[in-house]
Image 1: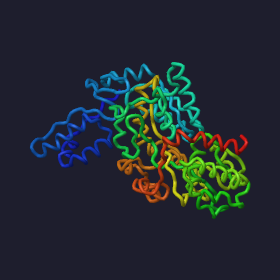
Image 2: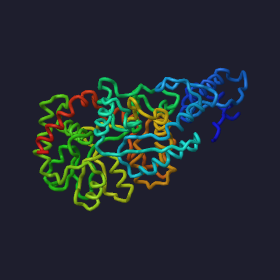
Image 3: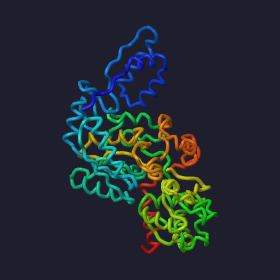
Length: 435
């Protein structure tokens, strides 16, 4: 097993010339734990008075072998050796997520990371669905029966976290901040939901992906009622966040308040009566939508902005994403750990890895540009900007918003309200569609 890296004399000397803020930024960006950063900051305070000597410190992999840190989720003081032993005992973990073209590579890369970093062979069971509400149903059922959670990490949209945190008794672990997840400190505060969750996406948004060679009139959601789209449109099925994003967007486009039940019924009536005649199929199957777009059986599909990037960079240059004039809602994926997770140590290791440079920018995974752009969902914080690959630097901000744009131009959702009322929307929508 590889030893933890140590700070070289050059590193220590550099730390003397940096301010405290810069030391924190660079240290957290490199994955150093607070125990190591405290030594660096002490060097800054000493300035030119002394020449500090290099000392073994912990990295994002965990504490040094003899040093113990408290891991909140298990309420234990653990050394590196303790953590490695726990990982060996756990042996595997189950992550609930969406489906990615590069799912197999994601699994292989995490397993390789654990082997290279800790010398431990583990198995990642990476479940994928485009209807994540089924994960919550399975979780609630298991916990109510007194059984362990079927999942160790939930990597799904923020609305599901909002629903879960409203449950009684609690179904989420309070695990942040954690010495095993130092990369969480790199994530901008707008994406932190401490102590129970942290975003792993920055700019995910539901919308309309369309063929610009066939459609040149889409400016906002209400334009989906244009008769020129008859038989050439797919929309998501009621019941999950893809559909929820559609209804939120349509409400904004029509000038309606999604917190007003009467107005939301009007929104759904518009969706059924005005847009419905144009719908070829209601589906949330991304592979089916790809096929329909590529064959031109559909000219527009209701899905996520990642599909437009995937298709465009896969050679389908007419595939674009509609940025709605009424604004786009952010619906990012968040990492959280359910109560009674069977593998809590590996769960945190996965969360930290998912926020790492490599997992945020899979430049060395050997995948094509399309799948790369499907996985990459924007900058979680400024320390990640250095990882934008050379082939994409000139175009990156054409496809992804900057952090300041996310704060000022994108719309946020009252997820507590959504969690409490979206089922009412879906039930009415399903009834109107005769489902």
